[in-house]
Amino acid sequence: MNHFIKTVALIGSGNVASHIGKVLIKNNITITQVFSRTSENAKALARQLNSEGINDLSQLNTNIDLVLISVKDDVLVDVANKIPENKAIVAHTTGSISINVLKRFKFHGVFYPLQTFSKKKEIDFSTIPICIEAKDESTSARLERLGEIISNNVRHISSEQRKVLHVAAVFACNFSNHFYAIAEDILGENQMDFNILLPLIQETTNKLKHGSPLDFQTGPAVRNDQIVVNEHLKFLENNENYQKIYEYLSRSILNLKNEKEL
Amino acid sequence: MNHFIKTVALIGSGNVASHIGKVLIKNNITITQVFSRTSENAKALARQLNSEGINDLSQLNTNIDLVLISVKDDVLVDVANKIPENKAIVAHTTGSISINVLKRFKFHGVFYPLQTFSKKKEIDFSTIPICIEAKDESTSARLERLGEIISNNVRHISSEQRKVLHVAAVFACNFSNHFYAIAEDILGENQMDFNILLPLIQETTNKLKHGSPLDFQTGPAVRNDQIVVNEHLKFLENNENYQKIYEYLSRSILNLKNEKEL
Image (cartoon, rainbow over all chains, first blue to last red; front, side, top):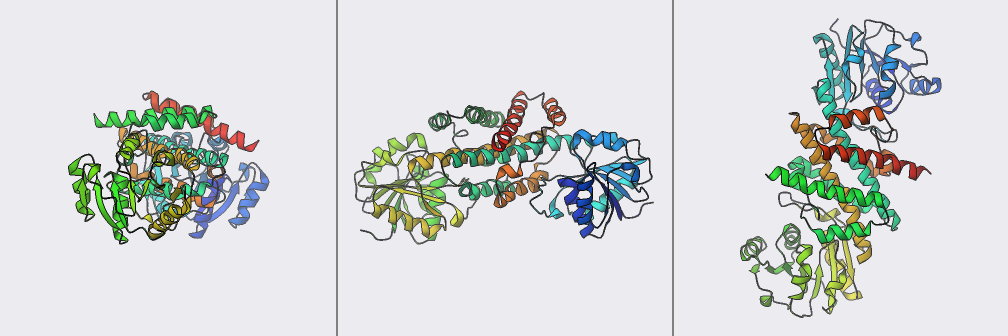
């Protein structure tokens, strides 16, 4: 039973499913079927993966190694409940959902790639942390080996740890990206191009390889430069939302600095 | 008069002054003197720049090409007022202060490198936007040529534009970095290492070369996935500050999306 995973059914046809599907077939894993509730989506992704599209889980061929569920969090349990009992590993790819939602399957686990996936952008899986969880050793080992085929960064992460990771990732990725969007908005309102900020953004993240973000905090807030902070707040007075964020974050920067220096 | 800038006095000994000083001497510009109110700081940086440290502006030798003021915003005007009248260009390196604070000098301008400087980290100037401003063409041209010696990204930016840029940079750099610090804090509280997030952070910024941050917004907030958002808020209930930021930012992400889609 402890052989390599070679055949995978993909449950879902969104960003994550499609990126994972592509990297798997590139590594000679067969995608046996692609399921989506919308038949066109199932077929469209199946075509790219040299697979068969289905929109009814009773058609699922379970004589395979892995059923990989990669659907929106709010339908995951519902979809999982419709998967027929089987001897394959059933795993999901989600940051925020416990392994236990899959416990009715004999072999179940989690295969969570910690990354931000967008339709428009190809991705290099080799450095992506693949967070593995399973209840039994054989499933754990098999998922681990699958992870190692696509990435050099496979880790064993429990459901509790995965949740922490997901919250931290929302701050580090989703919320940071929102600030890029706000910066673009502010520049655009003044006929300036967002690209001028790219070297600054790049350097801000490059620094993280050299130490803690706390050591690299710069700007008026951490200097407690109230003159500049107040000027910026005045500049933002036409946008109450941005103004509030600016004020709140500036205070938070100073608080965290003081707290960590105590 | 329209010759290259070859001799520069540095007013200030902090991060920006020290990084600019180093890149200038690397490019065969002479740093004639380094001023700091603290004699030791002046001398320490002067030693690195093969220069003379002074702590009294009446000792400033003004028979040079450029007096470059790189001090904290809140003392800039004060320091500038103590510089003797002279025929050199007098310029500052600050994002948030108007060129007009230097108007009593015949040749005055701004030489603002849009970057985040840290003592610990060497920096490549070649891609840094150098934002130039001057009232007369000769000063403008001379500052521009100085900028071109150290960077391929020299731009003419007015005081008004510079202020917009600085506000946008606070969001894109300082506030993003604060979120990295929060992510590190959350992971640390749970005995997990911040490094696991680096590939995610890197990809979040890499995407920006391929389109607008609006197109690449991912995560529970933009999907309006209230189940996950509420779970994360519950997870953060021991830290009211992080919880408030999470709630506010999630709403802001959805608002901006809806606004831009209208």
